[in-house]
Image 1 (tube, rainbow, N blue to C red):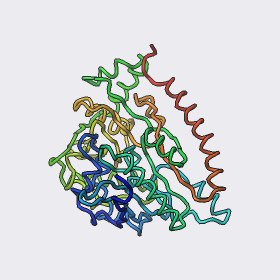
Image 2 (cartoon, rainbow, N blue to C red):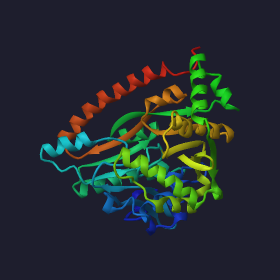
Image 3 (cartoon, rainbow, N blue to C red):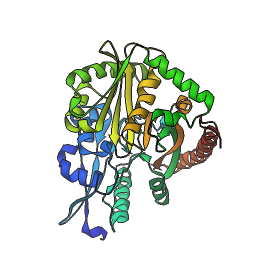
Image 4 (cartoon, one colour):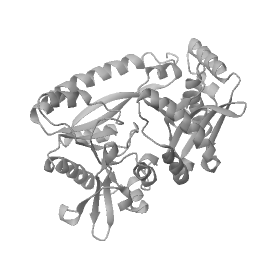
Length: 386
């Protein structure tokens, strides 16, 4: 396939493309399912007013089409008026550039809004022309930035292999770390505890007893999730969101629409006191992964966060044979709960040569620091030393 056999089209909302066409490249057969890339998830953020121009998220999705084949590639892309809701922090870059007289915003971002989960960003079916299509998508995104005199293009939460590919294409690579729980074929939570040192094992059991005291924990998924459940969870979500980032990213309608469209991919964990939910966590089930997203409580209790978000997620993953639990961004406290450091990657194209050189120098030193910290933490996991 040569470049004359396809055309690039820009759309300003996923309502302009069918769910079937988008999902055919976002979650093609033969690749692990990623609910965050689905039309159902991304379009819900637009339809409910969360990822929209008024909120600083103007959709500029790239579609790559070929005669007789229809949609052969896509790239979720947003024109951003700020750097909120990204979890790859470039505020200092923006500040430095604007103090020097530049204009950092708007910028281009390829990511899943409000979601620090690694996944594909160049959406292509596996096949002999996969690399060519992926290269065309990235080149198209850079061209959009250049032709519109934008400061930068950012591609967040990509795999290591994708980072290597984008580095070869001239983008700069940034690393960070998250903490994931890895299922080594455990059949019970006690099997997992058996791999920890005696002191850590004792501490986790103590935390669970303390958190579970007087409470019942309930897992709800699929058609069992009701609007009353969403009402309860939204109260928890608003409490956490208001305290952590001032203005929560999602609204009540978002949760109802996600429940309507993809309930089988959602897991609610409720902590209940006398049948009344007092805390909850929302997880997304994707392929072999359980992906923790939001949590909150209206009745703070000791260790309740750890139990609701981390230990209950492990219970579910073991019971359903899932390979990993990804518990969201940051959080060194997860290390003591059996979650291990995992490197995350993002790629960046900067238009201004001077700013690009400064950022490149910074990223080189930052990558080394991330690797040193990861090595330090890997040596201090709660697992038994061999």
